[in-house]
Amino acid sequence: MFGNRKLKYLLYYVTAVTILLMLLNSVIRNAKTEHIKYSDFEKMIAEKTIKEVQITDTQITIVPKEQKDVNQKIKYTTNIESGNIRPLLDKLNEAGVSYDGPISNNDPIKNFFLEWVLPIVIFMIIGRIIFGSMEKRMGSGVMSFGKNNAKIYAESETGKTFKDVAGQDEAKESLVEIVDFLHNPDKYTEIGAKLPKGALLVGPPGTGKTLLAKAVAGEAKVPFFSLSGSSFVEMFVGMGAARVRDLFKQAEEKAPCIVFIDEIDAIGKSRDNAIGGGNDEREQTLNQLLAEMDGFDSSKGVVILAATNRPEVLDKALLRPGRFDRRVIVDTPDLKGREAILRVHSKEVKMSEDVKLEEIAKAIPGAVGADLANMVNEAALLAVKKGRKLVIQEDLEEAIEIIIAGKEKKDRIMSDREKRIVAFHEVGHALVAALLKHTDPVHKITIIPRTLGALGYTMQLPEKEKYLVSKEEMMDKIAVMLGGRSAEEVQFNYISTGASNDIEKATQAARNMVTIYGMTEKFDMMGLESVSNRYLDGRAVRNCSAETSAKIDEEILKIIKESHEKARSILKENQKLLIAISERLIEKETLTGDEFMEIVRDFNEKNNKINQLEEVISNE
Ligand code: ADP
Ligand code: MG
Ligand code: ZN
Image (cartoon, rainbow, N blue to C red; front, side):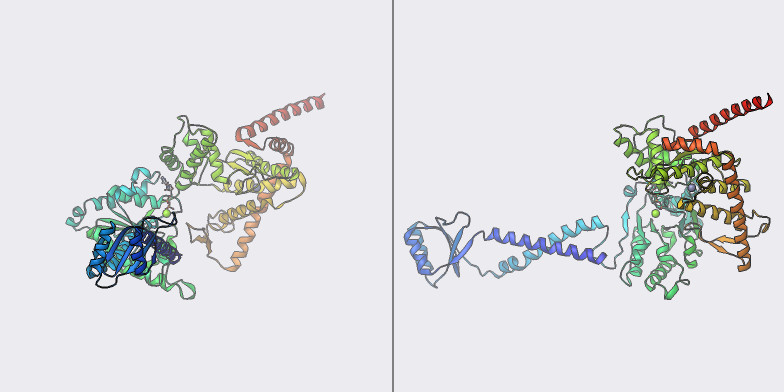
């Protein structure tokens, strides 16, 4: 890809220069020239049709008085017949023709200058201009192979400080020391303290690792060299290592400074689990990186930061003391953190004063900084679309949905029957949630289809951020997940594919109860699985025999069956309520948590009255 782009620019360059030279040429000799005989020239003098004449020592150029063609000037040239310049000049004087010359054309210095030096200078100037602007755009030295393409960010350019990073107080705290070190390294070296050479920022995507690294540079007011691990790998063979070498050379010249390697897992992948021989290029690059990190003197004030969301794949050698021996965890923000991040980003847009960011933060659990930044922007776009000057709460709420479930897709059409099924399915979730004890309140039910995600969804929100989940809560949660399918069964005696995602989530939850959380009697507190890949897909590794594994599956099935039965019986008992809410949902397409609870209350009141009446009747 890189090579292609270069070729393209080279082509542009050659074309541009060619056109320019052609233009220059036509300016210099802006006319067509025609060679004539000397005798014809003499004839023209006699006829007085000549405007002017230029004479060199080999040639005469004649500009005629009248042009035959207005669009194209014609000049004539003729050869000088040796020795007759003097008489010619007299003749011209006599005829009143103005002339230039004779000019010597044989000045070798001048010729050399015109024919060689000038074109080369022009070429170079144009090249400079074109490639200069290209380098700025592409951020890399296009013509400089082997030179690294680390961007140099001076303090003014990163422009980020710790104030821009919200909700990562612990991470910031551990980076403050590095900032201080970069400010005055002498303070540390005098005492003999060695600072860590590098710190590794670890956390899920979008939590602000890159942002934090920039903020460190901004706070320390030092240059910031940033490059991404993947850019090493796509290079030609041998280039990666050369780049690393160059990068460190540059950094040492510019010290104190920060070198930031983003997505370091691209080069830092463990060397020994490379299946099928591995990637030589990557290995070379990694080896060079290790060598450079060992080689340079940390007292000079070069700090290496790196970021990854897959620390477990990194080569152990990278994590040894003297390399990235310090880890800074940049985790998914909690409620307070989310609110703080929203506050940072809402400064960038005009926002109504009565916006309650806390509520917004509450409604979007699990969101990372990048989601929240995106959400504020979506809200601003919505406000513009609706012709508002300020972002209001409603915009933010709608933006949450966009982030959670993708944009509303209005043109997607569901048949009435499908819509009914989806409605009952969603109300099934909601009703089980409402009727069980250890569940989060229902926040919203909708059957408006979204591009991402399902045909409808039920949103439950915890009243406050939770860090511990009890066994009862886990069980009820699974029942809620299975409530959708259960409602379909209870109402229609029909099952659809719409529950696949629920099934997957419920099974995973049940599995975790058995294998990780020790929540079954059968396996007590035995750890049966460990999560290896915490930040990527959370894939679990089984720690038990195949036999036990089969028993685990049995246990999971037991939990699922139990929960399914629980959900089904709840819905059967409350089928009238299920119908009442579903009909309302079909009509309105979206119900808020309050509307939902109101229907439940109304229904219960009515039911109570009916029951009382029935009692009265039966008593009489
Ligand atoms: P990462 O490198 O961890 O994947 P980034 O640093 O690239 O994430 O974050 C992307 C964007 O998300 C940032 O530019 C910023 O706008 C926003 N963001 C992420 N985390 C935070 C945070 N903690 N505080 C403020 N903004 C954040
Ligand atoms: Mg990043
Ligand atoms: Zn469902």
